[in-house]
Amino acid sequence: MSDFYTSQGVSLPAASCVPVYLPYSSTPISAGFPSPAEGYLEEYLSLDQHLIQDKESTVLLRCKGDSMTGAHICAGDWLIVDRGRQAVSGDIVVAALDGEFTLKRLILRGQQVILQPENPAYQPIFVQPEQELSLFGVLTGLARRV
Image (tube, rainbow, N blue to C red; front, side, top):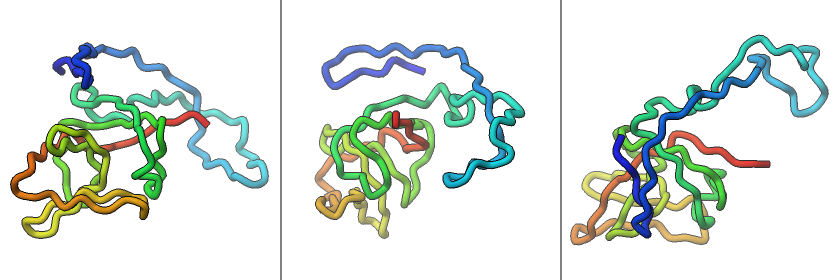
């Protein structure tokens, strides 16, 4: 994977990571009363192996703004973005429109490309033929502190 550069031109080198394995239970936990399986941990799971399909093409980006709150994506969330995955209509993508990065749902209607926010306070972006659109990657997951 090549280095990734921020908008200020700062290089973020590709790093090899060492997985951290955490104990987990495959038994779903009730959000109400405690489960009899609570406290029973059967295996170890690496979150990066669970959330990242291709580590060579995956980057973490920080979300800014509130245009995607309807998709439960909030400011400050860490976005897991696969740059190697082919985007299809309905995917949430990181796109560069005329050099400006944005996170939106990709809608394809015939030849029309729409970048759809998931917040009714924002209007859809109907990409015009004279505009430069580049799809940076597809959102495959996110992480946030609670």
